[in-house]
Image 1 (cartoon, rainbow, N blue to C red):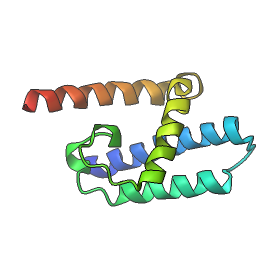
Image 2 (image 1 turned 180 degrees about the vertical axis):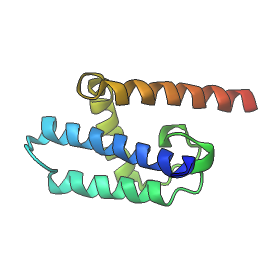
Image 3 (image 1 turned 30 degrees about the vertical axis):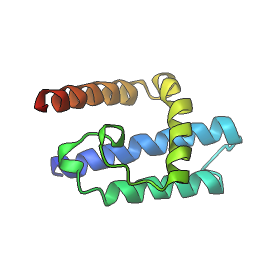
Length: 113
């Protein structure tokens, strides 16, 4: 698997886990996702699959172009605010890796300026 493909898969996995956590805690789902969260997950995965900047960025949060529709952007923002801090307890390795990669990318982008 090339690095762009693996980055894309990692990003999709992290977003899906965050949506699952949000749905389980906020909507009370035991397995799977409620229809609203399933739609958001599919949308986020599609956006990631079609991202032309994947080679030069780590995560959508570091991207200068926001390709989400406004209502989906607000939904994903709500999921991130809720799930982000909780990921450390539910998926600690994934959460720490995400933070490290994000900080590395932010520093790299600042160094370019």
